[in-house]
Length: 102
Image 1 (tube, one colour):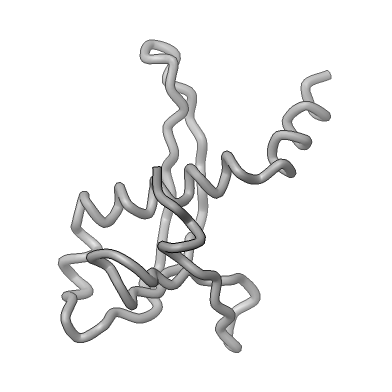
Image 2 (cartoon, rainbow, N blue to C red; image 1 turned 120 degrees about the horizontal axis):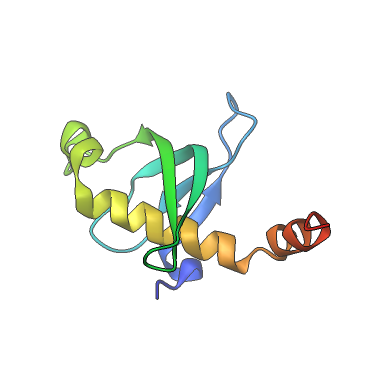
C-alpha cells in the first residue's frame, strides 16, 4: 500500500478549477498530473472493481520522458493505485453509495 502523505501532495494550478497531484517521492518524483474522467466497472467473474481513468500530465521533470510516461504501464498502475487509495479513503463516496441504494 502506498503512503499517500509521503508520496503525493495536492497542488493548485491557477488556470484550473481542479487540483493536480505532485509526486514527491519515488521514481516519478516531480511529475504533476491531473485525473480526468474516472469510471468504475465491476468484474463479477473475478469479484473485483476495475478503475479506468483519463489523465493529463501537467509537468514532467527533465529526467523523465513525457511520451514514455503516457505509454508506461508501470506509471498508469502507479496512478491507479493512488486513485484507488484516494477513493477508499474518501467517506463521501461510501456515504453517496449507501444513500442511493434504495
